[in-house]
Length: 383
Ligand SMILES: [Cu+2]
Image (cartoon, rainbow, N blue to C red; front, side, top):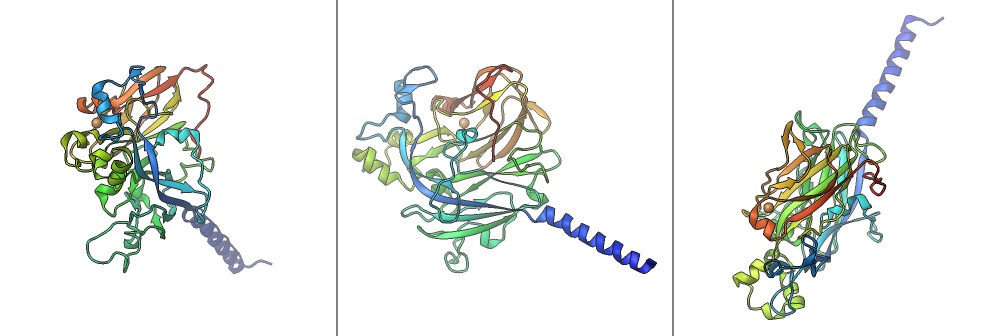
């Protein structure tokens, strides 16, 4: 015969097991990433000498930013550094970027997690001679995972995370508590930047930046899709100031040797201001494709200096930003804004910064909305 005391014990044990499982299922997930910083030869305008905006050769005014002459102008290709994702901590096999993320361009890999999870990044500096780091916005980090250089003589001693030397490896741990995820007026996921923060200005102008997406508990599914979202696009508006890149000397040496003594020449400096969207100028940005009626989430980012006030404008469709209807958004350096579109208007549409100087300097792209019966946009965002 089972006494009330035994029954009570059984109930308590069952409750305890249930609680343990519940805690484990929320707090137990760690998402591992293997990311290297490495040198790359980046092309801001692969279409050169044709400008897709008008299907003709670049005009004299446009050539200021993209035409190299082998002597005094660097052109549209620059040595830069990028964050590249690998399959494991041996850093031998690059993780291929899925076609749905083709539009990321120069941005580093997407790091993502649900609230309640943990992000671990094994980071290797594969550049030849830069000191780099990974500094995240938004997520919870202790001082040893801040990835930021302070001028307090702790670099490389108490703090190994803030200046990772060429060839060195460091593991960052970033927690994702509630305060790192969407707020009450946000959609189900939000965007944060990560970037190198040794010499912040030079590191980001050199190209070391990428996105973090944090979603509400359970919203990011095991198939890599967000519940209720058909497509995600991440877009960084920035004027890469190549005059402030670690690779300026190399770029001059390789592409414009006659400019060696003209680094302060105003016309030379102007030619190195690359008004880009994800590292592309003059309609070279690829991959912004969607279907009519889909739930499309756009993550908007900016970086840079006082000239980097950007106003991305979508032609043809409208969006919701924190409950307000828009077709233009305002961004300042290091802005993180998430907006939703349900396209109802098929076509190939302009998507550009609305600042006049920036339009002329090439901060222009396009996005495509296909009608229901279109066949060639069938894939959704993967992991
Ligand atoms: Cu702009």
